[in-house]
Image 1 (cartoon, helix red, strand yellow):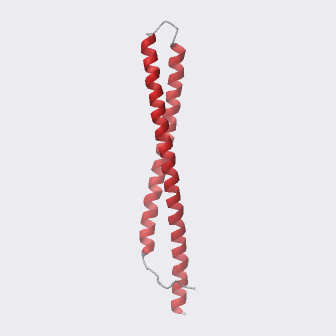
Image 2 (tube, one colour):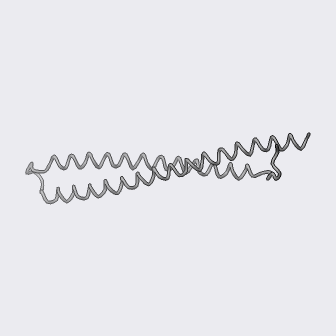
Image 3 (cartoon, helix red, strand yellow):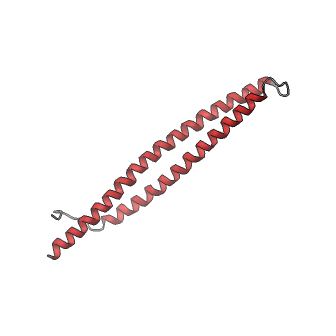
Length: 118
């Protein structure tokens, strides 16, 4: 059964929105990767600094202050990675929804054109 009302051309709007959210999804994925990489780097740096404490080569207070700063950076970057993950989930849902809407539109368009020519 064909729909009672059919809006021709709405597929163009759906495609534009879909393309926009696909690019936002890709950007969020890249952000998450870079934040996770940065966290891993900060953790390695923290371990290295911890290994330098008590060796007597560097000022203990400065090393401990640096480690505190590194811990803050790790927390900050971890929070950003979590937000990027949530953004990925958000845009994934939108992309899936718009893809389904576009498929539904195409099916309804075929049904509508077949019903109007019959």
